[in-house]
Image (cartoon, rainbow, N blue to C red; front, side, top):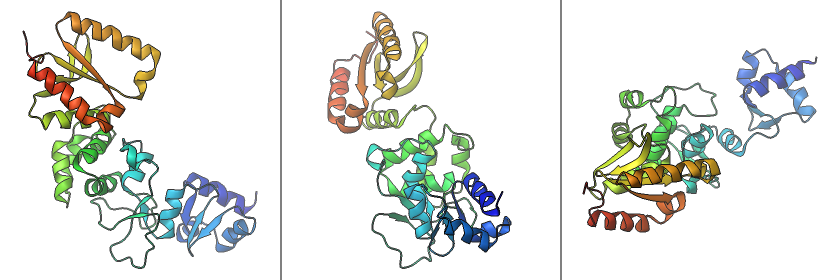
Length: 283
């Protein structure tokens, strides 16, 4: 096996991108990299970055400016919930505060440093730094939705996030508010919208042998239908549970992703009308 083939395998294990200094430390000489380049098996970005064909656009954008993938771009790649408008948007890239003459077309730059140290040649930000950039980039409710989804991941639990020395006031506020009760950003948006009305709202309260998404007062159940509710088996379970809740004296309202995120006035007016009829109280 040629040395350049070993290099390609090593590069693949690293996610398809490396700095030439890292390659050298791993035992791959410049002539090995040059051989892979000559065979069009890798690409060189700037002077010192080597990437495999098919490397994602966000990573290419980051290394092209000497930065790291961050904010909603990195959050999405990590499996966190991100707002619909941010999906497929321009890559978000963190760059050093001393960086200059960086082209900004087709890229969203973040200059602030996050709280977690990270290797000099990393191409993706530490998850805590990702959340720091989310805190300053998105509006509060969207940012909280991302943080809530992150808090369900290992090493990002609420107690961990609250213990971090966040330098930005917005991040500190999010750390105090973060919760694992929301199954998705959809639920975070609904809960924050209802609390803004001064309503008593509880999440994941067990009623009729399973949790409801949101309970307003004592008797108004608000169920939120994400993508998984399109499955027929899930839909049948929802209908069965709704029937039990109604027989027990609860009022049940269901809203979907589109309504909560893009037609909130309809959701708000429906629920406030129900509260005005005292449907959230025990008869």
